[in-house]
Length: 394
Ligand SMILES: *[C@@H]1O[C@H](CO)[C@@H](O)[C@H](O)[C@H]1NC(C)=O
Image (tube, rainbow, N blue to C red; front, side, top):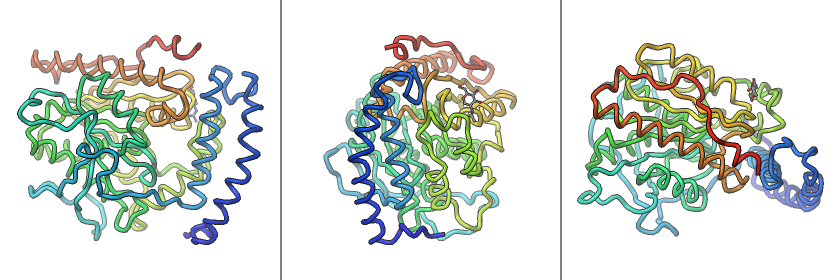
């Protein structure tokens, strides 16, 4: 269904209207949020409360005009840290079960390294994080302007280099599923071909990027030995149920404390999922399809986000499968995807603390691998307490 706002002229008019109303709305919200009791959550700082308000306005606007996020393969401000990579020449793009034949083919793609390029001769033992950004498969990019702060924080806390692929967005031609998935495979094969050992690669993704990581995990587990197994996967507020009714997102108990809106989810799902595909397909709605994997999984979820329950449910279902290793960190007073929203909505303290916990999870697995105990060790099953008071009670 094409929204009336999709039309160029309507987009333009709607943009002017939004900007004009913002001139009134934002100052009023600024005043309204001064007393703690008026904020969407009383524990939030003023900047957090305002950050969430602004994100809600942005997501509502972006969904109403079906915003086309600009993408290009030119290296911009990132200079030599932005690389263009070609589809792999190996036979890694296998047909996915029960996925209708599609015209989408692997394509050249870009990606940004943080904080610097990988150097094959010096970095042989370096841990490399392969991180997929969020944005519902319709928004955002791995460039400094979107992912810079998160990329640097991730590298610092994990003592690693990281590569953020510029996977195809669903708003570009031939950008529907499985475009981003093919790009994820291309990116993983690129790291392997650079000489990074798979056991030194950590998959990571926020929101839709987490969805992409789960797809990759499923594929690597189904096609064991195709490419080596990564050391672990980190999921930050993953989006796991694309079959959820957008109206339920708006009815959620946590709707007022989140910026994820039903209208945004509706747009993203319509753009991403091919019309002839079942919304409950394992690669589309992994929430319904737990699977066995040898790759340890760490999940972060915000206690105030609309996706809280289904994320915890997915983790529980995954844990019920023998030998799976899954650990969940529930961050109090956090909305959706603080990984992405950290600098915009002042959740940097919370994210930094969560990254410390993730780093511990990776370090623990590292020791296990050395002791050759990886498959028999199971890490904490539920959320582990973390000292977030500092971050929360500022
Ligand atoms: C909202 O989050 C709380 C945890 O803080 C959870 O108990 C509740 O069920 C959540 N609701 C939804 C719909 O996710």
